[in-house]
Image (cartoon, rainbow over the protein chains, first blue to last red):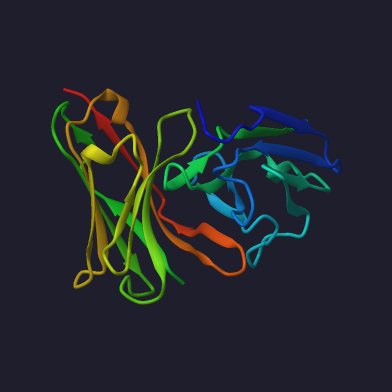
Length: 111
Length: 125
């Protein structure tokens, strides 16, 4: 069981907006601790999608956005495209474990 | 452009030691304020953080694996390594190495921006 909780699946049609949630606790996604999001396309390594709650690395389309509220984080994908079909993982530093914790991952299907 | 490449045996016998190396190109592992990390992923499952080493040599390990892990740096070869002892079938996974940034910049930042392609390690007799 993962320390961060994500829905196992999400879906949407092309052009739609989809959000994926990530629920944490008072030892990880809280206060000045930040959440990150990784995209993993089938058969490939994870790719950094969002860091520090809402920052996009260079090259990541602005269709992807992140937010944090309390002990939860969210990833929003607008203008959904077929190439967005992938697994998405949230991650954060955990002060109690003194290490990085991941969510269980959300498989996004573009219908 | 920083690139990372994992290497090591793809098959390890139960109770033996898994040893992997991550070769870094496009930058020195002894420069900057980076953590060099290992993450693994069993087939069909999620990501699990194994641990990391700072350029100074200090380490952080996953508490659930801490008794079996050693992560080390070899600056002369520009690579870092993972050793996992007493392996079982539960350690079968794709192992990734990554370059990560961690620090306080008004908020606590901790993310991995460069990843290796991953290497499959199977534990089986």
